[in-house]
Length: 204
Image (cartoon, helix red, strand yellow):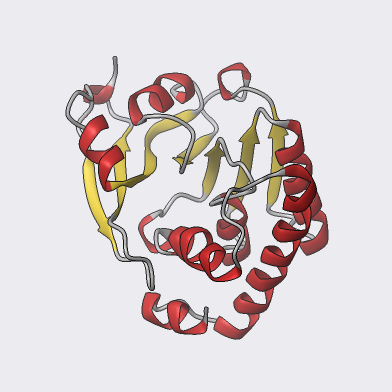
């Protein structure tokens, strides 16, 4: 974990490592009953979940962020832990997952984070966020359609993608976009961050 944070150039490593390890312990404990993730080994959680989410933190500049289809709070919890000055809203339709996130928020006393249980298309908080991110919610085009009422003009949609997802999704997408290749420490897989800016030219 420490070497991964050093590779990513993340500061306050000791404090953050302690928080991340505690989050991982909570995840593994809840996972025994609620099946929050198919990844269960400690080292795999560190690489496939924690370092994967940490690897995009320097590319996401939004201050008011919605994490759509947050699951176990990935990447929303990671952003909330890294950036206490940013407001993070996590959304998932599965009650057991939002219950876990609420427990995490309480354990860490994360005043900058909240969780909503429901479908993102039903949220009425119009044009409130300057960044909307998804790691495992849907393809980019579907995410954009379902959240376009929530993103401020000039804000960004962010999609965390594998090579296969990127190659499949971005061949037919109607929006202009930017691709950043992500180097996740100790993870032997190609990862990418897709960014779509909410501009007049990117309207349906």
